[in-house]
Image 1 (cartoon, rainbow, N blue to C red):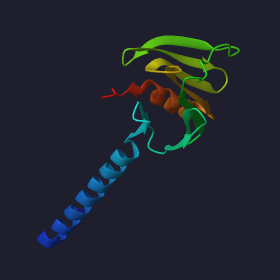
Image 2 (image 1 turned 135 degrees about the vertical axis):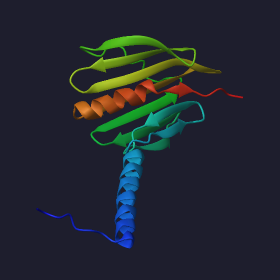
Image 3 (image 1 turned 60 degrees about the horizontal axis):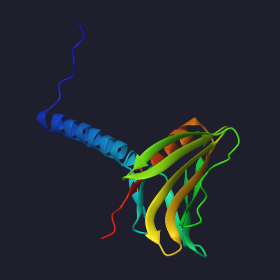
Length: 159
């Protein structure tokens, strides 16, 4: 008959404490890796970026421009009156939707393009400001992350 070795109370407490630490640390790391980061563009547009993505704002001649890069994808955005409408892209399909009360379009084109265009964000003397983001992704996981990010777009009210 095999006997199970006996542990003293202090050994058992140390073992349980170590096990609890490993479980809590694993849960914290898993939670941290799935946390989205809010990225705000000119206090008008927000996007929820994947955990590994970083946004880099810039200033164009007549618009706010910048890039967002993450694992397997790169996006370029433009917030201005002359932003690309994402029309006429060969082989593309689009989904018309409303984001924060404004007309918008999600555009997809094989093999690796996804974009979002939001019209009439705010009125200016030159005409309505538009928002366009165009993304290229390298694989299915990256493309899924991009599509989730694009669908997270929201407009902030000026106020």
